[in-house]
Amino acid sequence: MKKTKRNTGRRGGMQLVTLIISTTMVLTLLGLVVLSVLTARNLSTYMRENVTVNVVLGDTVSVVSGKALGGRLELLPYAKVVTYISKDEALAVATQEMGADPTEFAGVNPFQAELEIQMRAEYANSDSLRAIAQGLLKDSRVVDVVYTKEQIDSMNRLLRPVNIGLLSLAALLIFICYTLISNSVQLSVYARRFLIHTMKLVGAPWSFIRRPFVRQAIGVGIVSALLTCALLGVVVYVLYPYVPAIDVVVTWRELAITAACVFVFGFVIMVICTLLSVNKFLRMTAGELYKI
Image 1 (cartoon, rainbow, N blue to C red):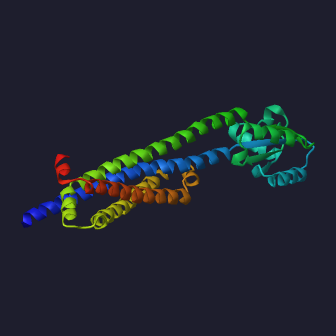
Image 2: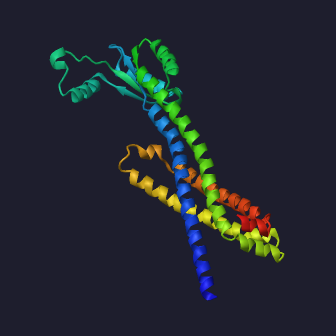
């Protein structure tokens, strides 16, 4: 008798461990996709805010006048950061990049002072930049406005399908996660279908029969979510030294939202699947239980 109870308890424990492991694996996959969707938005913003517009100033524009124009532009809604670059600073940068001083063969400093505008993400598109450039050229101190239209267009063409693809993948994965967790829960409840029927025969209310299964589902959901958050934390920690600007793309806000989604999905899916599975066996007769 004791041996039978021990074997039953061991099987129940193994089923519980298997359910936790399978749920953790599914939630980890779901968490990775949720984190990818959230970071894709940050990555898009980061890439767009690295778009710069160079406002070339005339030779007669003084340093004071150029900086004053930069200060005025920085107050406009499309400018995130405006940096004044003098002729000498532009020459020093070019000399460092080229490995030679351009004045040695040009005779004079060929560069002009300019304002480098780092754009806000929502304005980093061809239409907005075209309108901004036209407005800047109306100022008599500005002789040219330079930005890489082809690079901006290609970036926007790339980011749009990536965002749509990640959202579609997230929706598909939520369905797959529900299916996989539902199957695991059904197998766990299936192993105790005769216990459910016995409790029903002795007159136990359905709510009383469901209670231990729901408690177990909540426990499995919480443990699996904690394990998933730990795994995702390890993945992000390992990637930190190797992925540039990951601290900008993956912030605490994205990690917190991902953890919340993992807990909500783990809790809700586990409870729903458990209730559906238990109710299914509660409705069956003894003959039907032996046939499945």
